[in-house]
Image 1 (cartoon, rainbow, N blue to C red):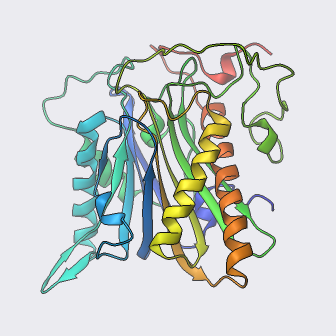
Image 2: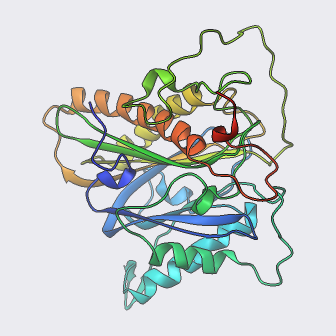
Length: 329
C-alpha cells in the first residue's frame, strides 16, 4: 500500500472536491462530487450529529446513487449549504429522475464553528452561497488545512482543519479520505507535536516525527468544549464496486481511524460521522480479501487525513488557538 499521486481523496478517479470559505466569517463549505452519481452510505458514532439526507443512505432505501456530499461549518445553519449545491446540480441537469423533474441527491453534515471568533452576525444565511461556490470550484486538486469547511475548525487545543489522504492497495484498488477536524479531543499527544496517528504516517506527510515516547495513559481528559460544539465529519471513498450494505460496513470500520488519530473520540459531545462512497469503477478480484484490505486502508487513510488537516492549518489574526506549526520544536 502506498499513497496516491496527490495523496488526496481525488486519487479515486472521477471524484472532485471544491472548497469555499469566508475569512471574516471564519467558516466555509467543502463539496465532493463526480460526473456521475455514486453509491454512498453513512455511519454515525458521535452523540451530537448534524446531518442532512442521511436516512436515504440506509441499505434498504430506494435511491442507489448520490450526486454530491457536502461538509460544512455553521452548525445547523450550515445544513443549508446543501441548498446551494442542489441548485448548482439542478442547473447542470443532474438529479434523481421523477417524471419530468430531476431532484439532486445531496447528503451532508456540519461542524460547530460558531464560537471561533468569526463574524457570525449575518443578515442572510451565507451557507447556500458557500455550498454553490464550493460545487463550482470542484476539481481534482484542492487545498487542505485552513480551507473550505476546515477554515474555522478547532480541536481540544490546536486549530483543526480540512484533511485528506489516499492509498493504492497492492490489488490496484484506490482508497481516499476527506475530513473536517473539529474535535473535542486532541490530534497530538499531550502538549507536544507528535501525532497520535504517527504509526500510520507515510512519507513524512505530517512532519515525520514518529510516535511519542510516552503518552501518559493515566491522564483523565476533561472536555474543553461544550455540548454540540465539537464534531469530526469525514468521507472515505474507493473505486472498488461496493453495494450500499458494503459501504455501510466500510464507513463503520473507518471509525477506527478516527479513534487512532483523536484522543478522546466519539464522545457524547462530538457529532462524529463518516460517509463511505464508491465510484464502482473497479471490480474486486477476491471479494473477501479485498474488502478486508479496504477496511484497513480506509481506517488508516482517515487517521492520516486527520493528522494532515491539523498539520496543514495556518494562522490568521484573531485565532483562538495556535496552529501545529506554531508549536516549538
